[in-house]
Image (cartoon, rainbow, N blue to C red; front, side, top):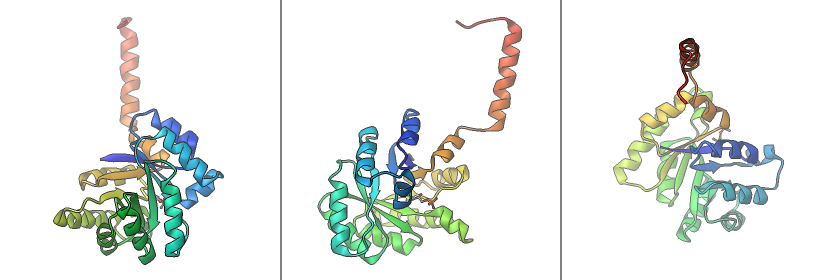
Length: 217
Ligand code: E4P
């Protein structure tokens, strides 16, 4: 399972990139707004740091403008994946961009039916938002299970990119279901390393080691 970082903050991306675990980056208009920076410059800079897919999202809602925005974002770097919303216009734009060889990440997916349409529109990635479904009392991971099953039935190439991740348990569940990618807020990636028994166990090992008076080097 690939791990993407869900961030438009260059410093956060640099910090986590050095871990070797970051296979790609996702951004959205809210994350760009939070960065306080220009979208084109920010995506270009992220693409110099990350070899894998970097998602950059369109903001228009009509087909012509959305397609023009998508082409402009795709031209920033070869590893840009253009993010479009899961609307009728978004899927038309997805088809048009995919037909010219651009990778498209279809975002804001909340049903398996939407995911089926995205795959048929040639999406490279589908982004189901598990956390936002959980927030309204629905089963986010149940959606991932259904999408994985449907895509396997028809051998679709579209990758399931689990988005809106809120916990390390979401990451484990996504891996158990065989999802292709999870995109993680930096704090969730940091949490994946941690367990209190690791910390207390290490503390005890170091204390016992000191008693021996030995050194390895
Ligand atoms: C990723 O592509 C999504 O934009 C992101 O995971 C949304 O997460 P949120 O629901 O925490 O905003």
